[in-house]
Image 1: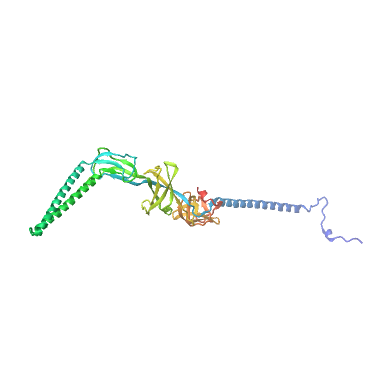
Image 2: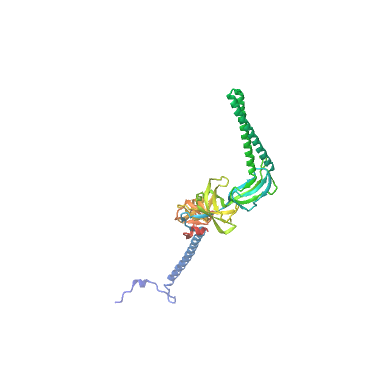
Length: 408
């Protein structure tokens, strides 16, 4: 019995003789190549799109980074720092007075020139007054006449009293004699007063120094006419200044009024002696602010034993200004001057916030802040004029503890 043939095999057509056999794997390979090409095209498209997307993202990030300003910050230093302010001052003599003549005449001689140090009561000049001397002589003669008249009136009054006791004269005549006696007494008193007045004027012929000091001005010379009448402008003979102790007047700005304390020692300097310091005491102030200059006039007394400081000189007074315990100090280059007031920029969560502040003392490189910021705030250094609240900022560095150093 013959073996049974596979029906499926037998039903398949056989290729004709001479026809090359068909390769079954060629079609699948083409499909594979097409798929690979499609995948390559897709990969290239994806790679281009992804690269472009990354480029745009990077450009956006770089643009945002470039648009965000980088700032430096500083933290305030705790407490207001004590500082020293230097103020210009005028040096004046402790006592400064012109000396005039009280009597008219001609200058006989002067005994002190400019720069001469004189003592109280020292003779400075002598005035020759011939007219006054004649008036004194006449007044003395009038006094003697009045004395003689008084003596006569007194003796007459005694005699008439005796006659009245004997009823030899009338009461009216006796009263008249008494009246003549009173008149003579009044006349004598008047003549004596006139003589005393002229003698007082005569004593002004000698001009004496009223206090210890130095002669700074001499306006007279020997033979000069001296007029001391009420209807004439008196001429200054000498100018005397007490220079052993000096008054130094310094105008203190109103903002530094708290630095003025009576009895405090202060230091003075002068351009004439750049390497020397002088000690003075703040003795008093005007207790009123000048509305024109907004300053307080303060007097400092200086012992000038060496005589180096001169009246009229220009000096500098160094005042210690205490800092406020509750105040903070920040550099001056953190301030923003806006129309609505003084501001500073504070960095909060990567954004700038403008805060209004109140300043106390201005130390130049730094300022004292009384309100508006706290000790932990990051204050922007050298802020841009266009800085506004809410602007995004990037902090470059934190300069802690350099509130004074950054501003200097």
